[in-house]
Length: 106
Image (cartoon, rainbow, N blue to C red; front, side, top):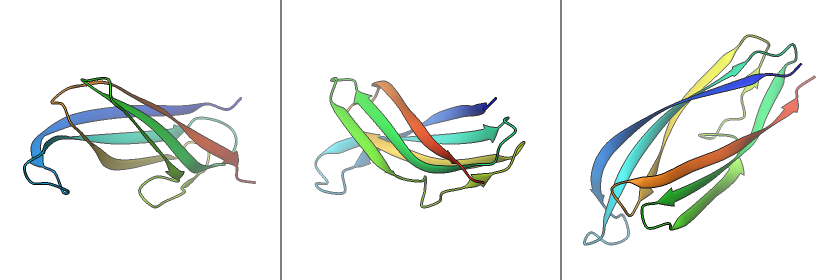
């Protein structure tokens, strides 16, 4: 049985000037994610897909290989933790959801 456990801790970082235009304010959030492999198999995280919805229901999608430039291999019982962030145009978001894709690493 393959069981991958994902735990998320979010943090509001406050208002930031936009990197594109200083007159536009954005709101920064960080998230620390711990991925734990509770299966009997060695797996490798190969990609992620996030859907971020701000308070105005504006949706941004993030897709790409790995996370924070890494594609970690997790042996049975191992965990990987990383921190990343998101900028949104409203001080509160309505949701952030997503998925990871793993492959059997054998």
